[in-house]
Length: 427
Image: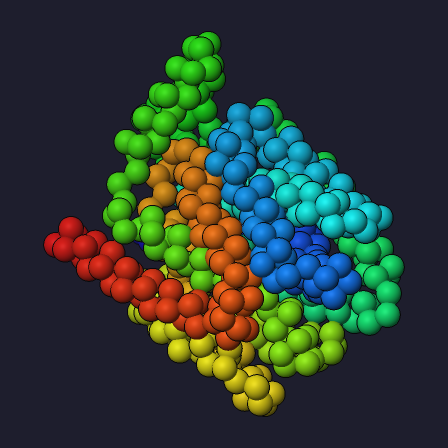
């Protein structure tokens, strides 16, 4: 007699849950504001209105990344102790204050302070989003593609949209930013609090490490120990749980160092070297951003099917060739083509690189390890931003692009050695 098979209910991906959707909405809104400020508003305003040098602008934006990175690791640790809502709300309020300072204060000192405050305010964003999106052990290329799609839409649409509102006055642009932050505060208040976060983490730990005793309950019991003892034990436990190649750390640094070299000077390059209007600059951002965004999901699925190795090789090489060309080309149609090639390169790099990093994350202490790894990457962004302005002032506008391309070659070589070692260990 044939048995009737009960249909198996497919498990919905974790990133489609209301909680993760809330995190992605917050990321999109905050990155929209951040992208508008650091790409379209602050560099041009500081350079053309306040008359600051590219080096000074680079240092101002470096303070933003310093504030971001100094707090990523501790706030990643706090996610599992005080919950998503409290951790994220701390950052959202500081980000909102930074926007208000930029809106109503016009002295260079206040703007530099706002950069630092913006960095501290955005520091909980990535640990919260990636920890939530990879709950239950999901850290595939598709998951990372969804996370980075939200990031890219926000960081890309911010300068693109704002460029259409700053031709004559910044008033309407600032109203848009304030409105976006207001929505972000409302969504943040809907995130799970301390008890709900602990329940989520405990359920995740039960799924991943049944019987290992590595969940939240163990951490709560340890809370009776002195703070210093808990910190030492925590660092030791973190060190024991990490089994990665030492080359991974300089690779993570280099990946964001190459990006940091370009962030402070892209707007200056577009406005003062290519002589683009804000609207024309938006079109060029769309050329690169749209290609990258459209490629994220297909590349993420390719990562799940074939792995990260060859996609990263292709992405690093495309970026290594196209970035120096971008700094040397003045013919606008050619620039548009090169920008699209850069977009293809980063479409390969973004989901593959972060899926590759996620594979190195232990199943326990995800928030803290992600915070630690993101701090290493962000340190590269800080030093890249500082060096970018100095290179521009000393050697010309092309030099940050040249060095960024060289760093991509170094990153390609580092990745070759890392993957070669991993294949040998598997055998």
